[in-house]
Length: 438
Ligand code: DOR
Image 1: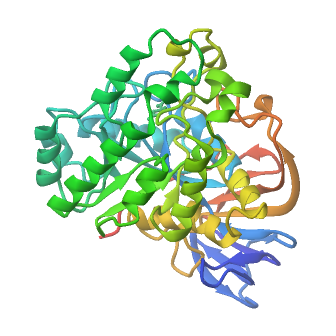
Image 2: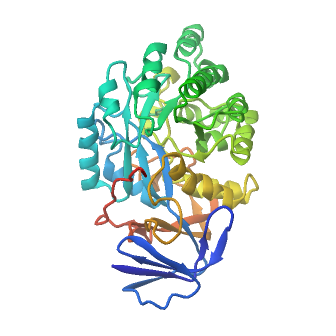
Image 3: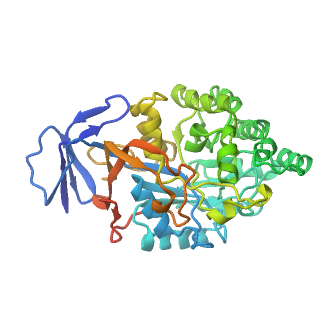
């Protein structure tokens, strides 16, 4: 199996940017990146007029397999990934049942090997009594801690369990934390129960709730000198805290917190209810600054497929939190880059390279000889309108419905095989587990 991609502007990382190169792929691995490759290949892909970039690594998605495959299973979720230029996803444990044991993790890995057309990794979820399972979970991409409750019933917010987790789990495994202060959120929910407007969600899950929990997580990481990753940072205050973070801490933010704010409840109502909640435009601007100064490392979607019926419930308190986004993040973030929010080099670094560094994924995130041939051809001139009815996610809607952009992924390659092209997935393609280096 060999494939040569010719004529494309190849993205060689944040420092070098784009250069016209040819790329040779052999047996799923990048064999050569140079000006003119004489070696023949079985297939040749014409990349003229396109960018060749490393596939996006979406390090935070929620699929619903097992539990609610009618909303998303590993097949539909992986197809949505491939459609959006995502070649690896890391999936969260709040499925049904929740992934809290090594055996349940193995079940997911087995199911993904059968169904996923892109590469995958799975988190194991922390509970108050599964320390032994967490300590043995070397095949998990990380340990997930819900310090604030969200979809599902995973929650660890007592100090004793958190200290034990940080002290006793394998230091090589990243602890990824959902940071919202549960006590404060519950109190504020009780206080504001009478309100019926969608924006109440951001009043209940306010900036202080996020800051309190993030400060607590940073403190734990610092005292235990333990790798921790703060998920979906949503506030200016957290960015400020993280700009002085210890080396052991990394952080990410989500496209919705970069592109939307509390002003969007008026237009989108419960559709944009998510945890952590949307914040102000000032917070939104601070996230962009946090990425460019290095207080935040990467972008991941928090893709959460709830049905449109659920999201349109009249009672905002009964609307589940989360939005689907996995197939739109690359196009939307690069569109933001072309509007001047950041450079394309920065955007690609945050989406494609940095997640591999955060989770120490072996041979992922770069176009370099020896790295896995997980790639995306992106057409910077392709006009695209995001339409709910065209989404590949099984829940089939998007908060960015009718958004028009210039520039869209057109071909996705996973392990040297075309996984998505000409608007269609290749269902014969199979991803593999993204391994941790070392
Ligand atoms: O809004 C969210 N939805 N935040 C989470 O942390 C979980 C997610 C889901 O799984 O629905």
